[in-house]
Amino acid sequence: PLTARANTPHRFVLNDTNDGYTGAYHGWDYWEREIDVLALHGYNEVLVYVGADAVYHRAFQEFGYGDEELRAWIPAPAHQPWWLLQNMSSFPHPVSRQLIDARARLGRRICDRLRQLGMTPVLPGYFGTVPPGFGTRNPGARTVPQGTWVGFARPDWLDPRTGHFARVAAAFYRAQDELFGPSTMYKMDLLHEGGKPGDVPVGEAARGVEKALRTAHPGATWVILGWQRNPAKAITDAVDKQRMLVVDGISDRFPHITDREADWGSTPYAFGSIWNFGGHTTLGANTPDWAALFEKWRTKEGSTLSGIALMPEAADNNPAAFELFSELAWRVGDLDLEAWFAEWATARYGAADPHAAAAWDVLRRTAYGTTRTDKWAEGADGLFGARPDLAARSAASWSPKKMRYEPSDFEPALGELLTVRRDLRDSTAYRRDLLDVARQALSNRGRVLLPRVKEAYDAKDAARFGRLTRDWIELMDLLDRLVATDSRHLLGRWVADARAWGADARERDQLAYDQLSLLTVWGNRSGADAGLRDYANREWAGLVGGLYRLRWERYFKELRAALAEAREPRKIDWFALEDAWIRDPGRLATRPAGDTYRVAERVHARLTAS
Image (tube, rainbow, N blue to C red; front, side):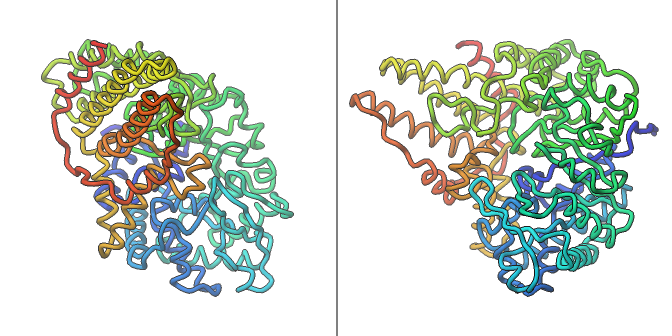
């Protein structure tokens, strides 16, 4: 037995977006293992969004809404997190009653297992989201229009100061208790990412939300996200600070953040990191900031740092970052990253090996050696997943526009991992790391190659352009073969999970579309054009060799024709191409193929030869 005492009471885990980007269609097999992993790493507060649609569906039937219209208002599961944040609704298809009921059963099972293990399910609280026409059906109700969010119409906000709000909140918490049982922690964010208070004073609104929560659950803690300018000082000044917890998503993002006690009036907060946005497969994290800041902030005079908050937008990636961040709450004294990564190399593969240690030292100094000085917390995503453009600098609109370390400094890690002794190569941990490092090295090379492609095109050198674009497609094909060797990197498996929840062929097709749209165009054309497209890009088999390859081949073909005919290239309707692919992506493999080690050797040979 191992016995330890955490240095903070709160060990919070999962982002609001987790149920979308990690996989909205995971079943109990997934969640049972996930909860075990989180428990073994000391997490005691787990955000649970699965089944929240059933709460809204049940509660609003008390306020003049029918089953069918509520199901049309509720988004499909992959897009529900942003509805729960009051950003959008009604996309892409109405949800079925059987789907709502099945997700409610899974949510209850998750909550019960968490309680069984002594962990707290953190459930969504009620802060004012209402379906369309609430004021018409409930005379006297006061709602505030919320405008749009990145191309989507936002749901209206019910004024929390009013009796109507109190009654809806009571119905919400009553339905939630019936479905999932009570909790002691509820997650709510007022006016998230551009929400509009109208003429409602934000402080008074916060008191109304707090009063409704206290009425339903007198001793509960209000959990609120530290993100952008949230929570506003007007909120933290208005509520009982000792029963609020800010889970800070940007502790390691911006260098100007130095005093969270001053920012939030000494409200308790959890030191957090979001090292991954949209589920990007990029390796890395700002681990030097974790080492420099966490213990310093925790032990300073007057500190209200009360926990850690692990919040990558998608889980189950970046194992070293997950392990290191999880340990922050269980350590005493300063964190020596050089020593930690050396120990990790031994623990990870089961024995000491000089090549494993050398590989992880390279990774420590590159992908895991970045800091918040450049105002980023995640690594640059790969350009193979970008909408084709010779000047592309990122695939997602809000990702770093350049590498945060030198790609050439990273590549030696691959050679070192390939040289790890044979008896340590059989573990899934080794194969996962080898794939990740080989994938990242290939992805990084794309950022080196694309400017050369552009130079050839600008110089109207058709022969060189043709040669370099063939190299680009060959790298994509090699990347697709590499990630196809691991089941966790198969787009087909993700889509199959979604289809398994459908009751008939029509619903199975709709759920597959829900999954695929989130990874590609994200939503409708206006949302894609506003910047959401490829926000959730990732280097998975079936995506790299499917949509991504299709786009770049189409683009290069048009550019070659433009060079040959001495004309400007014609514009391509990318949304139309992407939406057509989502509806018919062809056969997507659901089982891995090939040997990771052999393909990684080919990657290494290709990179060292060019």
